[in-house]
Image (cartoon, rainbow, N blue to C red; front, side):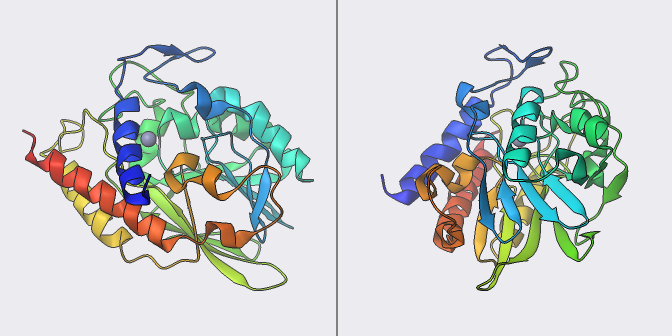
Length: 294
Ligand SMILES: [Zn+2]
């Protein structure tokens, strides 16, 4: 399938999959709006570029930035993903207990449900864009689109609130937060530079602005400015410059087409500005279509 077509299909599927409570899925202890079996299948961890590693599951992307001063973990998948993440960090030769900072691309259960457990196990500081702090503290119950049915993950009080452009530091490592609201009010991408023996790589871990079916761009009761925020995010994401593109879900950046579990180290596999642009174009099209709906 041509990439553009595929991007559109992926976008549509992503919207359909997240229809809340159309399918009641039971995680260990909580009822979740939706869980796709494939999401949390085990997946072999690998080095993406420099000190950046993929430690997530088959589709729920989690990124480890390993430094001599401890590690940063971005996203955690579901509650049941935590033992897999621990196993992946250890398989790469790092200590799980050395995770010092926890970050997240947005406060939905498929990316933050493990924060509470990992924070407890490691004592790491949890930081999130300030507008997602409320949803984190009530386990997603107040989410403007998926909320209203109780907590979908264990609530966590953030240790530090982040703003657009803020730099998160650990030793000499610097990670910049880019506020890309819409999918949630605090949805964010991260920009960082990593290096290996050969060169440096500018990496964008993008929270792609997908739109849930239940979102009305004219305004939601819990998020009146949702439409404007999506428009701003779609416009500003077009201007991002980077070498490597990654996202919250592996499917969003076609991980499994770019990398096989037995592949050797090859950062260039993730150079894909064209794929990023096509994906954004597909999301913009979905935005324009949603805008026509009452
Ligand atoms: Zn989400």
